[in-house]
Amino acid sequence: MDIQLERISLDDGRQLKERINQYWSDGADGYYKSVWESLHPGTLKRKWQEVLKESIGDEKAKILDVGTGPGAVALLLADMGHCVIGLDRSEEMLKKARENAKRLGLPVDFKQGDAESIPFECGSFNVVVSRNVLWTLPNPIVALSEWKRVLRPGGTLVVMDGNWYINLNGSLKNRIWRSSALFWISIIEKRNALHRRGEPDWRRKLPMTFRKRPEYDIELLNGLGFIDINFRIIDRRRFGLAEYLKYGCYGDTFIISAQNERLDKT
Image 1: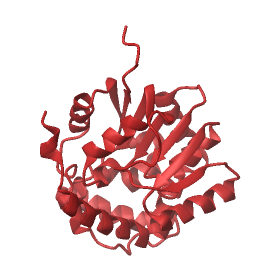
Image 2: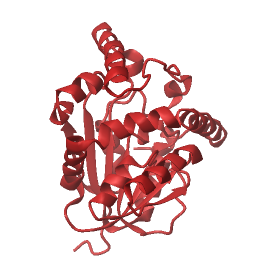
Image 3: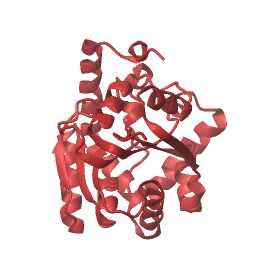
Image 4: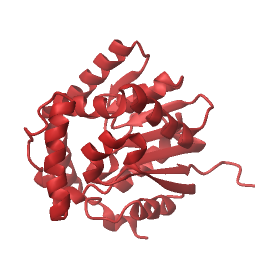
């Protein structure tokens, strides 16, 4: 695989990053409410922690959460006893994350940084995780290379994501389901999900938007030298009927786990 073919030019990449960063910064409050309601209340919290444990095991680890947003995954991991650093480009998101950490009394260190240029030394982490981040990046191969760099030999990469292009090219049934879901989300979560900012046009310019995933992700990971690559589909019905009705229109979540190459390959 010629990974150079998958890269966006530096100038186009910078412009896209600024637009993407502004989009998430402007919507930090609404996204915070959405993520928090999806991951943290009661049973949902326990179920997401079960999912994370299935990928990273029981051993306490130093973990980097890339694209942490309001800190939901980082805080779930910290609550499980891990040492966690959350990284995000948006300072507005990081403000929400720090507020959440204080609210929960959890010791997570949140830092500003670029997912495609990680501000840490090589081999700094046992585990690198990301949730719904890779598809938003102009150069996912550059990002994955960086995530691999900061992993210790034998360390674990966990990518949680989905085929979000369904939002752009969904069936009529799916579009109707999505509209209905926004109504119920507004009622159940007591937030105005119907007041949307529209679909950002930058989505169509991103390399991952129209790729078949997780197959494409696995192809990239193989090309970068990751080993023991596995994936599984997480049916949203695992988190209850209400979650499925609210978010099932976006499709199932997939989780990929992969190991960084070990120094001793014998």
